Length: 104
Image 1 (cartoon, rainbow, N blue to C red):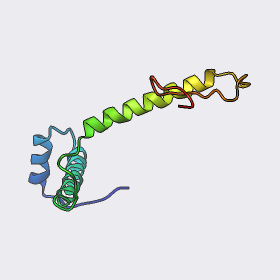
Image 2: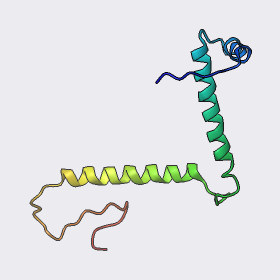
Image 3: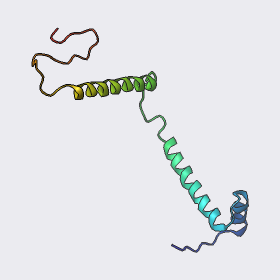
Image 4: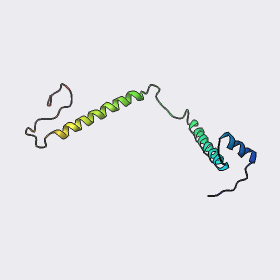
């Protein structure tokens, strides 16, 4: 949508040169994008001190736990998919705990 604005010629020419923009339009567009980004950053800065968090939270450790749990679920699903549908022994159960036996 075309918009006519009365902008100081020296100001826009300085912005064009400093930003290495080929046109006034490119300079104005870049300036508006930077203005919006800066305002959004200021909104985020306003959140500091308002969000509660635990300083001892170990996000890397939790990521590793999640990865191990996902791998275990994937493996158990793979094992279950390989089991015959008509099990000859209905008392036989799949046990995924190493060293443990079903029914004990």
